[in-house]
Length: 297
Image 1 (tube, rainbow, N blue to C red):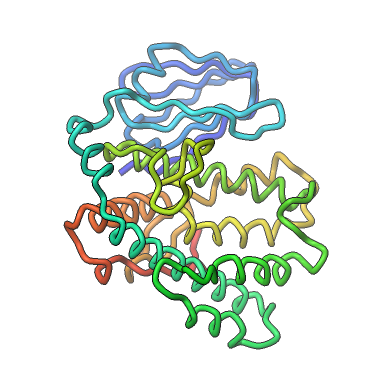
Image 2: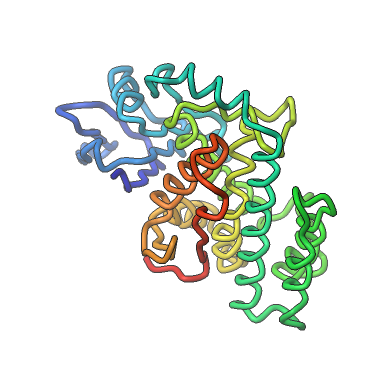
């Protein structure tokens, strides 16, 4: 299973040869990586030359290629037209997902997100009252109709980054958070499209301006691994270093379903299991729970 995340930060030429990615630098150094090992390539430099043949091979091997703008923020990604043979059937299934199934899954997703937020705050000893978040979690109702997610989010971010912090302000912390979430979102896009579904049709997010509604839904319980790393990097002035650290999170081992696996592979399993629930092929009770605070590198 692919696991390697490759970030290109300098002037380079990327090409293909014999099932390998070739990277030639300005200093004529040559690096080779088997395509079978690569999950994602992030182009953080606008001075990269890439061959069309390599792009074709990346698509064939379901390798996510992400382009960044001049500020190093993801701005585009490449998806193949024919990454899944039975795509017409899966899209028809997706359109016919029942409202009850979507709301049931959303309730599970929100609860897992809140549990992960609570675990992170407890681990960092940032809660005055250990029951504060837990009490909110216990009040979740079907489809989160009382919007506990928003209530906890307001408490969570101020506990994590201080009372003056808000997600809307222009700050280094938000720059790091937005970058990390973008990388995470791209990997959910990769898994959803690889399994033949549309990222546009969400279970809770339904914005007509959001091309990635379903990815935005399913990634919610994984955001806290980005939050934790940004908490560690909150005073780090080196933007380039911080972003490399955030991309490298995809290689972090987490405890998923009682097993140790890298985050990239946990996302693959989680998306697959959620789609099974939505298609009526599995029950919500069989969805895997996971702990983002137990990590290894």
